[in-house]
Length: 389
Image 1 (spheres, rainbow, N blue to C red):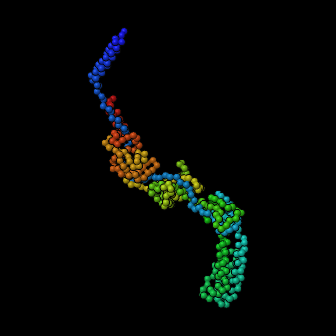
Image 2: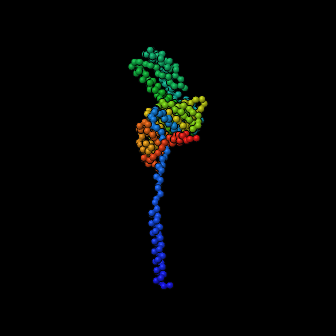
Image 3: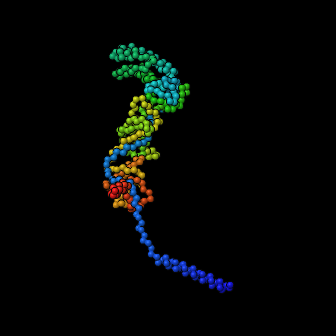
């Protein structure tokens, strides 16, 4: 077969196939399109509530730590060796108010003070005859003063005297100088004995019995155990709802024993995290004990917030925006947030009767068609009741 015949056959086949395809397209285009069903509108049902303002009391719960009402340093006011008192000078040891905590060595100072008192007695003895002759009105008072002086006790009060002549006489005999010098030494000697200023315990001990300390050395730190408070850090914005004198509930953990308490102080400053410290005094009943450093849960009652409403806080976005339902469509509105809680918030700023969405919505736009979840269930029940039996 020649090339000319082959080419003719191929061209004929191409023309035949192309014509068939063109006829098929023509017939398809002539076929009428079936009628399309309109797209069904998808309605999303959401949880919503009607705005109705009332007076709301919103409590606040926060965790706090027990702290001592007093925490002071036990400082040496005189140099010397630490000698034992009536309390074990160790961390954790407890004591009662007025107990002798420790002493700084004072034997030499005591002996020196007794010697000065003896010398003072001699001075009083030498002036008594002159007082009897020249100042008989003051003789009896100085005689009683002389009799009341004891070497091992503090000097009694100096007798009252009047007149310049008697004052000059006493000053010339060094009575006044020696008296007030002894009183000064008695004050110094008293600084060698360290007494407990309150019921408490040692939280830190830097020097134990036998150690030598200088004036001003911090021997230990003490905390008061008969007056404990709970320090509760509260966000600065939330602290405005807590007032001094508020009665609170205090729990040991979530399911612990409940105690009552009262707010006694609010700090006038905030820390780096913008928290204020609220101090609560806990009422102790029975034999229950609190320990410094223990963590407790405090429930504050909160104040009355007039003309407001409470909704879940996850229904709010962009800090103060919510969705409302108006004529079956979503509308974005702004609200005035009054108070944030852990799971809810208190607000106003919408007109009463508005329908506010109370759940978080994802991937929705304004003006999207929606229905109310409760109304949907009500419609379904109505349809079921209308069906013939």
